[in-house]
Image 1 (cartoon, rainbow, N blue to C red):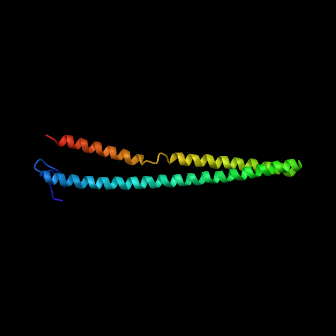
Image 2 (cartoon, rainbow, N blue to C red):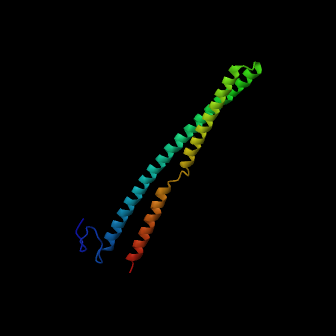
Image 3 (tube, one colour):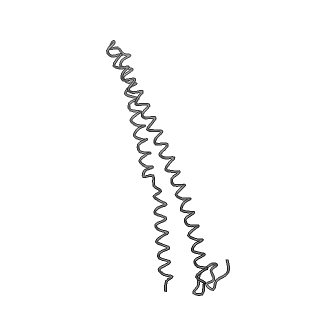
Amino acid sequence: MSERPSGKPGAASADTPVAELVQRATEQITRLVRDELTMARAEMTAKGKRAGVGAGMLGGGAILGIFAGGTAVATVVVLLAAIMPDAVATLIVTVILAIAAAIAAQRGKKQVSQAMPATPAATIDSVRADAETIRGAAGRRQP
Protein backbone atom coordinates (compact mmCIF):
# COMPACT_ATOMS: atom_id res chain seq x y z
CA MET A 1 0.00 0.00 0.00
CA SER A 2 1.12 3.56 -0.45
CA GLU A 3 2.47 5.69 2.38
CA ARG A 4 -0.12 8.14 3.75
CA PRO A 5 0.56 11.49 5.42
CA SER A 6 -0.14 9.94 8.86
CA GLY A 7 2.87 7.68 8.42
CA LYS A 8 0.80 4.47 8.55
CA PRO A 9 0.36 2.42 5.38
CA GLY A 10 -3.29 2.54 4.29
CA ALA A 11 -4.27 5.08 6.97
CA ALA A 12 -7.09 7.40 5.95
CA SER A 13 -6.60 11.12 6.02
CA ALA A 14 -8.96 14.02 5.42
CA ASP A 15 -7.96 14.11 1.72
CA THR A 16 -8.46 10.36 1.07
CA PRO A 17 -11.03 9.96 -1.73
CA VAL A 18 -14.38 8.54 -0.70
CA ALA A 19 -14.19 5.90 -3.44
CA GLU A 20 -10.93 4.59 -1.97
CA LEU A 21 -12.42 4.54 1.53
CA VAL A 22 -15.47 2.64 0.28
CA GLN A 23 -13.23 0.16 -1.56
CA ARG A 24 -11.10 -0.42 1.56
CA ALA A 25 -14.21 -0.82 3.74
CA THR A 26 -15.66 -3.33 1.28
CA GLU A 27 -12.44 -5.35 1.27
CA GLN A 28 -12.21 -5.28 5.05
CA ILE A 29 -15.85 -6.28 5.53
CA THR A 30 -15.44 -9.11 3.01
CA ARG A 31 -12.35 -10.37 4.87
CA LEU A 32 -14.18 -9.99 8.19
CA VAL A 33 -17.21 -11.98 7.00
CA ARG A 34 -14.95 -14.71 5.56
CA ASP A 35 -13.05 -14.94 8.85
CA GLU A 36 -16.27 -15.07 10.86
CA LEU A 37 -17.63 -17.87 8.65
CA THR A 38 -14.39 -19.81 9.12
CA MET A 39 -14.66 -19.36 12.87
CA ALA A 40 -18.33 -20.46 12.84
CA ARG A 41 -17.43 -23.57 10.84
CA ALA A 42 -14.68 -24.49 13.31
CA GLU A 43 -16.99 -23.94 16.29
CA MET A 44 -19.78 -26.03 14.77
CA THR A 45 -17.31 -28.84 13.98
CA ALA A 46 -16.12 -28.90 17.58
CA LYS A 47 -19.69 -28.95 18.91
CA GLY A 48 -20.62 -31.71 16.46
CA LYS A 49 -17.73 -33.86 17.65
CA ARG A 50 -18.72 -33.34 21.28
CA ALA A 51 -22.35 -34.21 20.52
CA GLY A 52 -21.18 -37.34 18.68
CA VAL A 53 -19.10 -38.51 21.65
CA GLY A 54 -22.01 -37.86 23.99
CA ALA A 55 -24.43 -39.74 21.74
CA GLY A 56 -22.01 -42.67 21.62
CA MET A 57 -21.81 -42.71 25.41
CA LEU A 58 -25.60 -42.58 25.67
CA GLY A 59 -25.79 -45.51 23.26
CA GLY A 60 -23.23 -47.42 25.32
CA GLY A 61 -25.23 -46.73 28.46
CA ALA A 62 -28.37 -47.97 26.75
CA ILE A 63 -26.66 -51.21 25.67
CA LEU A 64 -25.33 -51.77 29.18
CA GLY A 65 -28.84 -51.09 30.49
CA ILE A 66 -30.22 -53.77 28.16
CA PHE A 67 -27.58 -56.20 29.43
CA ALA A 68 -28.55 -55.29 33.00
CA GLY A 69 -32.19 -55.99 32.17
CA GLY A 70 -31.31 -59.32 30.60
CA THR A 71 -29.19 -60.24 33.55
CA ALA A 72 -31.97 -59.21 35.91
CA VAL A 73 -34.36 -61.50 34.11
CA ALA A 74 -31.80 -64.30 34.32
CA THR A 75 -31.46 -63.56 38.02
CA VAL A 76 -35.18 -63.86 38.60
CA VAL A 77 -35.25 -67.11 36.66
CA VAL A 78 -32.33 -68.55 38.61
CA LEU A 79 -33.81 -67.36 41.92
CA LEU A 80 -37.14 -68.92 41.13
CA ALA A 81 -35.54 -72.15 39.92
CA ALA A 82 -33.49 -72.62 43.02
CA ILE A 83 -32.07 -70.14 45.47
CA MET A 84 -28.39 -70.95 45.37
CA PRO A 85 -25.05 -69.13 45.36
CA ASP A 86 -25.28 -68.93 41.54
CA ALA A 87 -28.27 -66.66 41.97
CA VAL A 88 -26.31 -64.35 44.26
CA ALA A 89 -23.51 -64.16 41.70
CA THR A 90 -26.01 -63.32 38.96
CA LEU A 91 -27.52 -60.61 41.15
CA ILE A 92 -24.09 -59.08 41.76
CA VAL A 93 -23.41 -58.97 37.99
CA THR A 94 -26.78 -57.33 37.42
CA VAL A 95 -26.04 -54.60 39.96
CA ILE A 96 -22.59 -53.95 38.49
CA LEU A 97 -23.99 -53.67 34.94
CA ALA A 98 -26.76 -51.34 36.14
CA ILE A 99 -24.24 -49.07 37.86
CA ALA A 100 -22.03 -49.03 34.75
CA ALA A 101 -25.06 -48.18 32.59
CA ALA A 102 -26.03 -45.32 34.88
CA ILE A 103 -22.51 -43.87 34.87
CA ALA A 104 -22.18 -44.10 31.08
CA ALA A 105 -25.61 -42.56 30.51
CA GLN A 106 -24.90 -39.72 32.95
CA ARG A 107 -21.57 -38.91 31.28
CA GLY A 108 -23.13 -39.10 27.83
CA LYS A 109 -25.92 -36.75 28.84
CA LYS A 110 -23.35 -34.29 30.19
CA GLN A 111 -21.40 -34.38 26.90
CA VAL A 112 -24.54 -33.75 24.84
CA SER A 113 -25.69 -30.89 27.11
CA GLN A 114 -22.26 -29.22 26.86
CA ALA A 115 -22.55 -29.27 23.07
CA MET A 116 -25.90 -27.47 23.21
CA PRO A 117 -27.12 -25.09 22.02
CA ALA A 118 -25.78 -25.98 18.59
CA THR A 119 -25.46 -22.33 17.60
CA PRO A 120 -21.93 -20.91 17.27
CA ALA A 121 -22.17 -18.66 20.36
CA ALA A 122 -18.57 -17.40 20.26
CA THR A 123 -18.90 -16.44 16.59
CA ILE A 124 -22.19 -14.64 17.20
CA ASP A 125 -20.59 -12.63 20.02
CA SER A 126 -17.64 -11.80 17.77
CA VAL A 127 -19.92 -10.63 14.94
CA ARG A 128 -21.82 -8.40 17.37
CA ALA A 129 -18.55 -6.87 18.59
CA ASP A 130 -17.43 -6.33 14.99
CA ALA A 131 -20.72 -4.62 14.15
CA GLU A 132 -20.37 -2.32 17.17
CA THR A 133 -16.82 -1.43 16.14
CA ILE A 134 -17.93 -0.64 12.59
CA ARG A 135 -20.85 1.48 13.84
CA GLY A 136 -18.56 3.37 16.20
CA ALA A 137 -15.98 4.01 13.48
CA ALA A 138 -18.67 5.17 11.05
CA GLY A 139 -20.12 7.53 13.67
CA ARG A 140 -16.71 9.11 14.29
CA ARG A 141 -16.02 9.50 10.56
CA GLN A 142 -19.11 11.58 9.79
CA PRO A 143 -18.65 15.38 10.02
